[in-house]
Every structure is written in structure tokens, then in C-alpha cells.
Image (cartoon, rainbow, N blue to C red; front, side):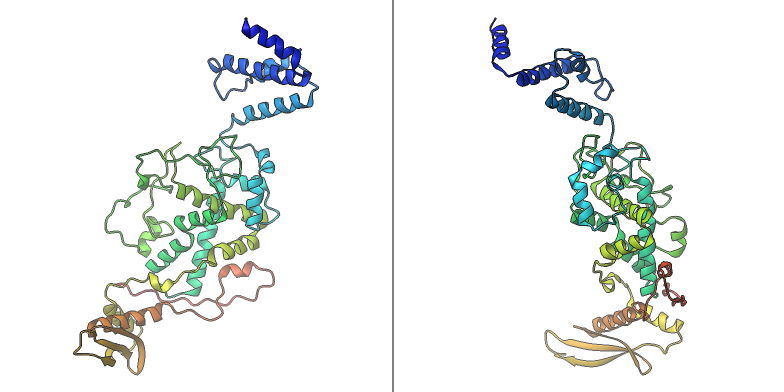
Length: 405
């Protein structure tokens, strides 16, 4: 009885527009209850159908139309695993990211939104970033490798792999996306803002060593003593010299680091497709080569004196000889010895240490770094020939390679 009186009172006091809004909420609530037990959440049937069929509602009311459109739009978005294409034009986060990175105007927001959809979130190849990431991955590794080989033609292979990983490895690309302000969505879905990075997260307790993307089998992935060599690079290694791992299972989650790295690679591929090679290379120089990397800290020689002797023998230099240049406090608690490595009359390196042996090892290490870190003048990379008005190509310096012990 009280409920009936309350309904009569509300129908007499509220304005016509308020009564229409109240009746709309009642119809939506009752329709949702009827569909909750019988209709799946992602089916095309909408609870607004019964509301539209009700002749007592004024469909010419602008507020009612706006409410119906918003409900229908939200219901239709729930049908998709990733945001629809037309939602990119309404995303403020996408527009801010586009302006923050100074991306080319030819790159549309729809493609930028696609770069943020991982294959684990949407398996449809027409809407995820897998194809763009493959192209961007090849471009990043190509530009990085040609820069390292042309700038430092004598680097050992292990140092090249370490430098490649430092420039375009997953950790670096993931940190780069965080610096850009790319946020991660809690769960992927059609109703999520396209400006969020969407991927399916790894289930708790999953072995992260098996949750990484790759190509092909894993013939030597479990080897303990893995050595990065030229021969293994041809068959079993990736671009960083690590064993190739198997690909993910269908529907499996990915770590946050890998999803972020894939998004950066996809953005590189998207820039290349929409704006061409000059824009892609400029983006690479601004965001990758601009990062400081001290290559001299990547060396790790176990026996530098022996390697230096073999290097001198290969290059027909005189046998290296260690000589004391200066010393102080030989009989004190903290002596200092300065030793130089000489090949004939030429000093190859110099090092200081608390003992003669330590000073000699440091001098040999300095001599090896001086050899391997050689860089020619006026360095040009092969991709510079793609620029308009480029000067004729001159052959780049190619070294014999490292001393293999």
C-alpha cells in the first residue's frame, strides 16, 4: 500500500521530463533483470529494446535520446575484445600522446590506438599490433646494428649483442613507454579508453621464462654454458645473441615489460608505414640513439694479457712487453704502480694498480679497449643513401674481427 502511494505521489509532483527519466530507469532496471538470467553478456540483444517499444515514452525528448544512445553505445562496445575504431577520435589520452611524442600528422589516431592493443587482448590480426610490431622490430634492429657496426667496426660480437640489448632490448623499450606516459588498462575490453595499453596479464604462478614471445623451437634454450658465436647466431640466436624461445600458447598472458616493448615496436612500424623512412629514422634517432650508452663498460675480458698477445701476433705487431712507468710506496701498505704495455716503441696502453700484476692487467685491458673502440672519421651508415641528395657511397671500414680464444 505504501509503495502504491509513493508511486502516485511521484507521478503528481515530478515534472514531465523527470517522470520520463524515472520511467526510463525503471524500464532499464526491469529489462536488465529479465536478461540477466537468460541472455549472455556479449549478445546483441539490448535491454533498451523494451524501452523503445513502450509508447508512453517521449522519444523526441533530447535527454531521453542521449541516454538511449549512451546505453546502446556502451552495450555495443561490450561485444568487442578491444575498443572500436571510431572510439580513437574521441580519446583525449591518444591525442595527448600523439602531441607529446611529436608524431607525424600523417599518423592517424586510429593507427596509434591499434599499436596499444596486444595480441593477447585481441587475437584478430586486423585490430592488434602484432604485424606492426614485427615491422618495427626489424627496423629498430636494422638501424641499431648498422649504427654500431659502422661506428665501431672492431667490436667483439658479445659486446655488439650487449649494446643491441641496451639500445632496443625489452627493458629499454618498456622504460621508454613509461617515460612517454603510456598507462596500462587493468583488463582489456571494448569499453576501455583507446589511450590505454591493453593486454592479457600473466596468471599468478606462471613461469615468466616461458611467457616470452619468440619464433621457432627452443633447441638450446636450457643450456647452462651458452656462448654467443657467429655460427650459433645463424641458427639458434635472436638479435641479442640469446637462445630463441618458443612462442606463447593461444590466449596466454604476457608480462607488462613485453607488452610495453611490443607497443613501442608497433609504433615504429606505424610511423614507417604512414610517413616513410625519413620519419621513422628521425624517430629512431630522437628516442633511441639519443640515450647515453658507455660502450667501454660492456667489455669483460677474462685474460686480457693473453688476448693482447694473440692480437699482436695476428696483426704482425711486435710482442707486447709490460714496463714500469712509475711507482710509489712499494714498501708501504698502499703502494701504487703504473705499468705500460709497449709493442716496440709504441705504447698500447697504461694502467695503475696496487700490485704489478694488477697494473699489468689493467694496462692490457686499456690496450684492448683502445683497439676495439676504434671509430673512423665521418661515419656513414648504409641507410643514409636513402636520403635525397645523398653523396656517393664510400665503402665502410670492415675489420678482420675479434680474436677468438
